[in-house]
Image (tube, rainbow, N blue to C red):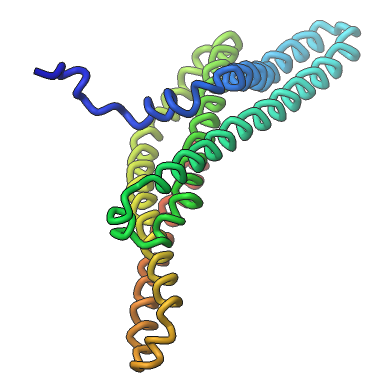
Length: 258
C-alpha cells in the first residue's frame, strides 16, 4: 500500500524551488541580503530625522556635518542595495526561465507524436513565451513582496522607538485595508488565469486561421473566420478590461487610508 504522505501531490511552488530555484541559492541569498540593506536604509531615514531634530533642539553644531553625511550614506546604501538586488533577482529568474525552456523543449522532442498532435503548435509555442514569462513574473513579484515585507517590518520597528502610540494607530488603520486588498488580489488571480487561457486560445486560433486562409478563400469562409476571430478578441478585451479595473482600485483605496 503506497504511503499517503508520499502519494500527496507536491505544491507547484515547492517543485519550482526544488527543481529550478534551489540551484541558484547563493544568488538568492545575496539578493536577500541586499533586501535587508534596502529595508534598513529605508527605515533609517525616520530615525535619522529624529536624531537630527533632537540635535537641533539641543543646539548641537555638529549636526550640520553629520546630518547631511547620514542622509548621503543612507541614500547610497539604499541605491546600491536596490541595484544589486534587482540585478541578482533578474539573473535568477532569467536563468530559471532559460532552464525551463530547455527542459520543456527536450521533453516535447521525446514526446509521443500522437500526443503532440492533440495540441496546436501555436499553443505549444505559447508555453515557451507567455506561460514561462508568467512564471518568471510571479517569481519576481514574490521577490519584490519579500522586499516590501522586510521594509515594512523594519520601518514599524523603528517607528515604535519614535512614537509607539501613533505607530500602533497607523498599523490599525492599514490593517483595515487587508480585507478589500485580499479580495482584489483573489479576483485578479482568477482573471489572470482566465486571461492566460484566452491568450493561448487566441494564438492558436490566429495561427490556424492564417495557415488555412487559402482554403477559407476557396470556400468563401472569410466572414465566419473573421467573426470568430472578432469574438475571441472581444473576449480577451473584456477580460483585460476587468483586470485593469480591479487593479485600478488599489491605488485610490490606499490613498484614502493614507
